[in-house]
Length: 295
Image 1 (cartoon, rainbow, N blue to C red):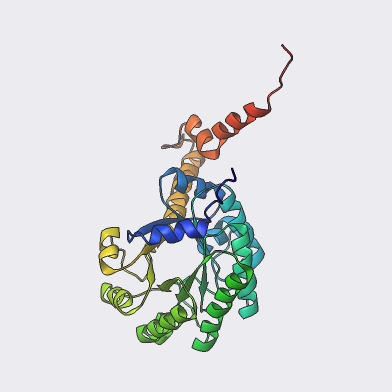
Image 2: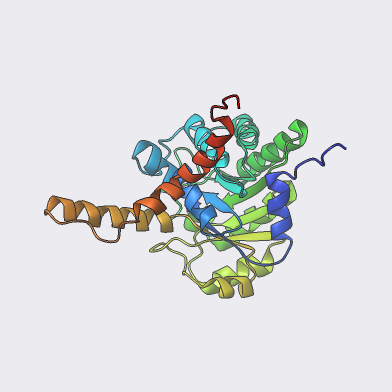
């Protein structure tokens, strides 16, 4: 009997969103943090460009990291997890033709969704200064190109369309862009950096389809609990910096203890460290290839 084809990561993500329950996705920046998210029992994860840039090249999320480096991060993360990965595709790394390449490349690397935004290059983190956006027509072309790329290639990947127009052009322009993105083929709409709960409610009440909230601790958008985000009308809540911020604080504290001649506190037991890195799975698989001697 022929085995049934395995459901794609995008299909699993789509099915999860269709349940109507808020999808909460902590963000990973590398394969290790992806392992930790899956081990914690989440349904999916977000791959943050801010986190990947910090982990991979030690630089800010200011357009310094390249398409190839980001695609390789998608590949490495998807290789270690069974969860759907929603991946940051920044501006698509160029014009509409570059967007097509980005979407196809992310899909081949295993991403369940790719996020494309309307900032000019070099882009910036959505909660930092200096953001500028392209005109609305060019922004819509990016989403059209993303939709064309997945349809023509036959690859199953969801498109998250992000607009940063709220910053310099106001909420009305951001809503108009998001509406146009939906018409161009976007699956999930992401209006970045609303300034209040009232603005968040307008986003969810006035836009069609699935909506994404971006919970950046210390950023412009109010940090609301998941139940309240769901009540407002959001379908997906991403936490792009939570894990990286917690990890950096813990590393700073451990380094300070070592510098001052003290044993660091709060370390994982070595056995748990080995399990999370994957040694137990490795040892289990290794037994399949152990030497077999004649009886």
